[in-house]
Length: 346
Length: 117
Image (cartoon, rainbow over all chains, first blue to last red; front, top):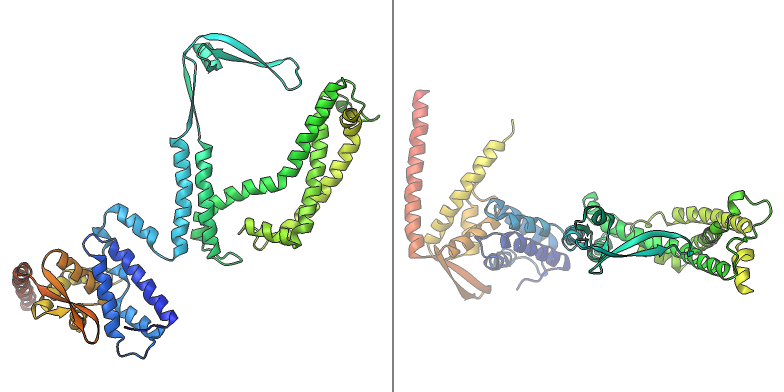
């Protein structure tokens, strides 16, 4: 039995893997037969060499054997074997890259195949329901209901015919993209840090990375302003309604006239608080970039922050400070504590 | 001018000739794969990569033209010996006959061309 050095063993294993891939794709040859013959060939060729056999000696024998790609003609393969063969060629990260892109395509395909179908109409209108806007003001729109309880749209009301609407199944798409993101991360892990992927692999892996990182980025940057703005909007609107202050907003003297409308106060106040929250949160994120938070963020958003974390954090810091100042200024003008929050406390 | 047409012609020629040579090598006696490769690699221009022989051996075995049997070897792992089947023998005789006819025909055409010049 031939003993190989570690490097030589890697060469032999990789060569046998290629034999398996190429000869296995041929309908005329038995891959196990060929593998056995190749192993026997190596044993015979290297039997006189000093043990363990070095990578150089193995390389010479493999060079004489030639590339398994040339042994089998692609012409004799069915088209689907050719596609599989191409996907199996090359190093592991290429296969993963193909799988990554394939999963995104499958997500699009499944999104269309399993689209949500809504049927409207085909039944007489038996009721209409008035929907009120959130402040309980005048009816904003009417929703019509058929006798079978299904909603009826304007198309049916006007034509008496049923209309069908297909909506892309985002849940199925998101599931495939999430799996694709994991395989894309596996590709990245083999590409080193900073990421050095060939451009071909970038095209195959970046679509899912961009999609997932965009969503994660929006959540990371947007949760604070969204929560602060949403909560403050609800609190102010609720307290103003409870205390009958909807039309008695005590805006600061000298405020612009369009600020004087009490209807816009909750929105303006929420925008001011949201802006302030965004500014504070983004500034904090930027300042924490040198701690474990920065390393964690960089790891999650690979490869996009591999080399640009400092630049991005600098921009985030500047924007955060600007938003903090704008948010504070807006709060002084809008004065939400006087208007809503203080009334709720009272 | 490139050697594209020549390369293509050589590739096609080799493809057919390798089958003929492999069967002829086995016909000379019971051989195992490595021995067949050693015999054929000495024919200049025929074998570019030695590994090409092994898928051919597998194919002719699958086609029932040769049989194999494993035998223990004192020099290493068990060896797989190849032997022509009667069907392989019959096919080889026809292939050799056809090859002889082609060689003679080509030689005749070449000599006629020489006479004309």
